[in-house]
Length: 306
Ligand code: SIN
Image (cartoon, rainbow, N blue to C red; front, side, top):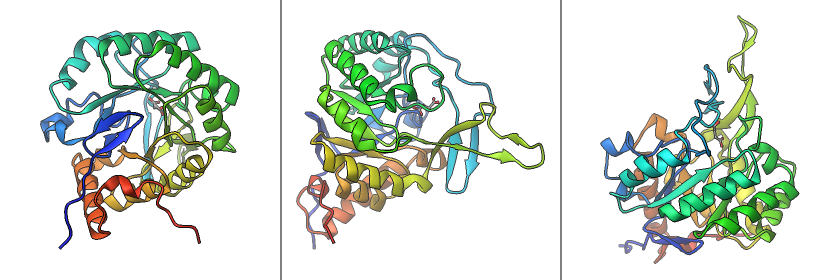
C-alpha cells in the first residue's frame, strides 16, 4: 500500500497547501462556489480580472459553447479594484487559501497603481494579465510584444510588495520570447495559458455568434496546447509556473506538472461541475501515490525525453 504524498507546493515563495488554484474568470470572487464547499480546501484562487475602475464588460452574446470548450468575450466585467478590496477580499480572508489578484490595465501606470493598492490590502500574489483577448486597450497588446510585456512587468514589480506572476497568451508565434522578456524584467512567476482566440458563426443568421465577433477558447480542447506551451516555457526560463488550460482531471493536472508547472489552475471545468477542483486535487494525489512519490511537487518538470 502506498503512502499519501504531501500535496504542499510552493509558487514563487507562496506556500500552497495543494497545487490546485481556481483560474481567474471562472470562479468569480468565490461566493457562489463557497455555497457548495469549504474554499479552504483549495490551494488558492485567482480572482476575476480586476481593473482600476468598474467595468460592465462586453455586450451579449458573450459566451458560446464549442466542441469540448467555450468561447468567451466577457470583456473584463468586474467591480473595480477598490470594491474588491472593500467587499470581496474580506470575504475570501475567512478561508485558509491564497488569494491571487488578477489585474488588467489600460496603461503600465494603471498596473502599477493596482499593484500598490492590492499589496497594501494584503493579497498573497498578483497575477498580471497581459493576455485578455477581449479588450481593445491593454490586454493582448501587452502580451504579444516582448518590449511591452517587459515594461508592464517592470512597472508592476516596482509597485508590488508581493510576488508578481505574469499571465501569458498562447496567441503568439513563440511563447518563449515573451516568457524570457518578462523573466528578464523581474517577474517572480508565470501563468499560462490564457485563452486562444477563436470564432463561431451561426450558419442560419450568418452572423458571428458572439457580439464581439471573436472570443477566447478554453476548456478540455485546449489542454494539449497548454501542456506544450508550459513545457516550452519551462525549458526556456527558470521561473515557477502556474499551468492552466483545459484541466478537468487529476491526469490533466499531472501532465501540466510533468511539463514543468509547480501548481495548476482549474477553470472552465468548474462551470460544468463546481467540485472539479477538488476532484482534480484527489486525482492528482492518487497519481502521485500510485507512483510512490513522497511529495506531489516531485512531478514538476518530470517529463522524460524520448
Ligand atoms: C474576459 O473577461 O474577457 C476574459 C479575461 C481574459 O481572458 O483574460
